[in-house]
Image (cartoon, rainbow, N blue to C red; front, side, top):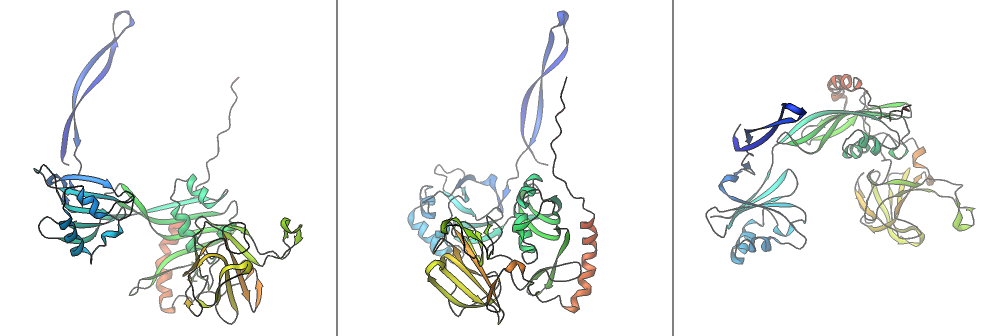
Length: 425
């Protein structure tokens, strides 16, 4: 360990009581050796430079940042030209940190290198001391395995909060179980267990969830296992299967929006009464997913776009024909992306949530047809995705054995109960 500055600390020690019951104090100076921070960062020894750290502010440009740090515009132009194939300097994002490595022994402290951090892991280095070049790099990341469990009391998000876990786990779980569990209808008492990995820089700085490797979700008393497995190493295709090697995917997603910041505001109901119309019955043949304006709307299954228009109470909408049996429609979009005749795949963005047509708030009305009749998608037994290749099934079942043993052994973490207040007489 490298030793940094030696800090002098004056400590006050409480000694024995002096005559008369007064405390006798004594002082002692001790030398505390404090480790110096590692000077190596971004591949540079920072001790060799004057280091300027700052954040891109709204309205900042690459040229303005360098110009106010004593780099002339002709040099800035050369840098921009020579690095444009590697990094577009116009794409600096407000709020992102940057670092300037400046010359030592120069009164102006001119920068020799500009480092822009795209996120906590990835960064771009632009060097311009002698020759000009740019390259992208990533900080070394350590992957650490974790386990988690919990019980639903009000919502999955609340359960994760109570356990001090990342909300990213909720989004990842909703993606894994998107075809099998209605995450908008979780029940109190539902349970979950997870084996997942987290990413760390320098062993201490948490930079996010890596992935979920195995999951168990008990919903309405029924257990659902999920194990990650690579089915195509060449194309790096990864999917999730249950304990019997059955693919968790279905031909249709449960919802046309991701779980994040979304709720079902109105369900399919043929006997719905509406106050606005004198409490008369007005059938609602769709499912409304309330979400912020500009939330991406996704195709719930592969298919061909047969309608993309703006019309009456539907507002902006897209309709997709999936096969001779099923069609889906997505209403009230702010803007449509999918065009008539276009083939879209499950999960493709086809538009964005808005308030066009007859609507009192931002949402997407999701309509589902089976054999030409509108039905409730949540009550349909939807077709499965393709099963695991028979050649891989034996390898898969062998692979998940230790994972299943591990996840079965995780004890469910129950929510904290408030201790009863005991009266003191």
